[in-house]
Image 1 (spheres, one colour):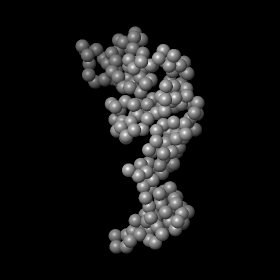
Image 2 (image 1 turned 180 degrees about the vertical axis):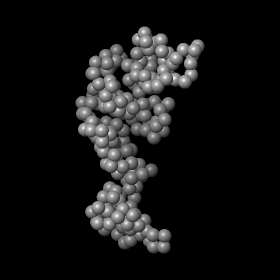
Image 3 (image 1 turned 30 degrees about the vertical axis):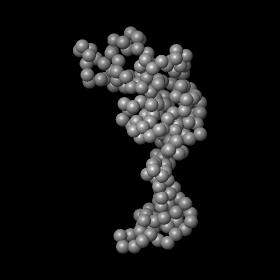
Image 4 (image 1 turned 180 degrees about the horizontal axis):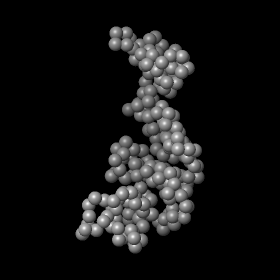
Length: 199
């Protein structure tokens, strides 16, 4: 199924064209007439008629979960997506079960708990699948980026400087200074930090 994203600024023979996203995750440009007539139902990717039927009868096309699913596919499998280099371009893929069916994705992930949650991968070096994905708050995700650090204070590991600061009753800036040192002092003994995901 095709979902219209925006109007394409370039006309063809003075006719309006539309930027669309297909169920397979591909972005494509389609003439308005083809959309109106129903002649264009996919980007030509070969999505099976059974998949098209399934995707048009689940009744969730306009939901947030459906948008998250489509955006996930596009980031990982559409080279024209602006975020492709950080996802598909570095080997992050969507598992076949989710790629072929929104219903499978929704079955495994369930409804988003609230607007405070977005989809997160537990291991940012691995792809999208049931075992590696969860609904997480922005704060939880902030502790799980490619630039996230593990902070080690006296042998205890913390997933963020904020978490360490709260536990030890000091400020986050103090944790950073303990682990990274001052301009004129080395790090405090038994304090260090390292990137959670090694390049």
